[in-house]
Structure formats: C-alpha cells, structure tokens
Length: 110
Image: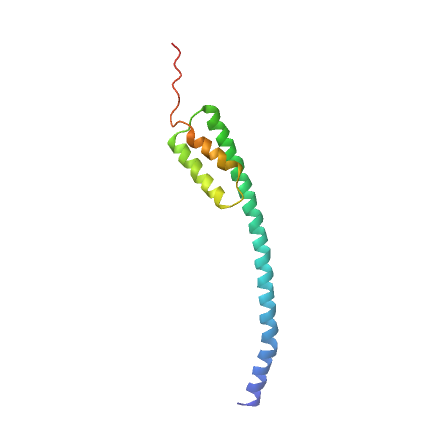
C-alpha cells in the first residue's frame, strides 16, 4: 500500500471514530428526549380519554339506558384507555354501563 493511501486511511480512522461516537451519543440523547415526550403525551391522552369516558358514563347513567352502538363505541374507547395502563375508576363504571338496558324506557303517562 502506498504511503498516501496509508495516510488517508489513518486520517479516516482518526476522524471517523470520534465522529461515530459523537453521532451515537447524539442519537441516544434524542431517543431519551423523545421517549420522555412520548410518555408525557401518552399521559395527557389518557387523562383526556378518562375525562371523556366519565362524561359519557354520567350521561348514559342519567338517561338510564345506552344503545348497543353507543356501548360499542364506549367499549372501544375504554379498551384504548385501558391499554395505556393505570386504570381503576373506569373498571367499575364499565360494569355499571354493561348492566344498563339497550333501549329507552317507555315513558307513557296514561
């Protein structure tokens, strides 16, 4: 190998290793930063979903019934919320909704 080629390879080694290390460190920092942001966004989404599910729960309980379509929608939202973890209050609310009738009570005053 010629001396010019050896010198080029040596410079690539000198410049390459620190550059690779710096890029790796930068990537790790970015991953940590974005992971923290993702956790915050997941918590915010969970709080929003919890609020919405509770609001819907109170609406249906006050009405005394829930249609099959609305129960299916509520259940889908609940499952998404449940998959985010740390559940509690909505588990009992779900059971209460499942016990509601699927059609409006007849309000006939004779």
